[in-house]
Length: 171
Image 1: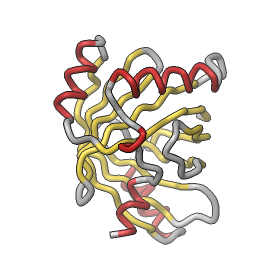
Image 2: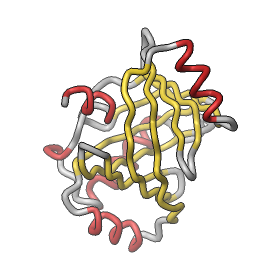
Image 3: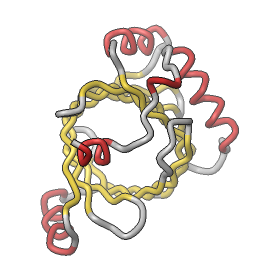
Image 4: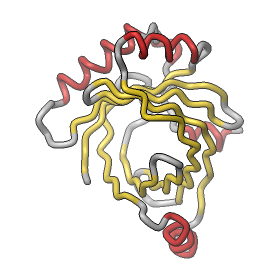
């Protein structure tokens, strides 16, 4: 499945405040997911296998490292046999890094929110305005992302350009 995201990632000093604001907006809580993302070394973009208790997917995406709300072109396939898939990928590709996180997942319509506690990195919040079928468009997705940044009091100084994998590899 291919989809378009406009997304941000920000450091989060007060996860409980973000959680409360999302609840006040009537966000649908999908649960807490312990996710292990194994990133593989590929010549272009990022390839990761997500193994979680809620989400299990093979994900390939391209995104520039920008602090501003930025588009990501994503290809996602559910991983029905994640351990076998991981073994196959490890035989074919080098492992770049592994990200271990606890993720709370919320939705308001087509907008997905993550409150993440990433091992070795700390707390973050992500906003992903998602267009699964090319009916929303980039302009509206940008508007949604900015709206929720404002609602959640996410300032530009809190924004993070890099992926968790890039941040971990800098440690």
